[in-house]
Image (cartoon, rainbow, N blue to C red):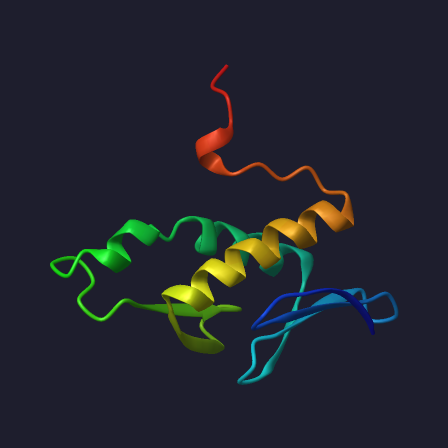
Length: 108
């Protein structure tokens, strides 16, 4: 396994031998296929951070994130979500995969 990128809370690895990715979320190491990595990216980018500061929408400032067809369940706070968003953006940049946030894509 080769470490691709680290952030304050997480570390991302790539295994060429197993043809998969690993993300160390602190609580556990999660194995991801490329499709699962794309799904994780979509889930994380779909989280509205503004809701974490609105007590009527999200009074506790927590997100429940399920990975790999609900095989893994994580409860993350606002700082962990922001860090995960940054990590995934950096990882896709390092891997050389064109990744644009949905809000930045142009409509044709």
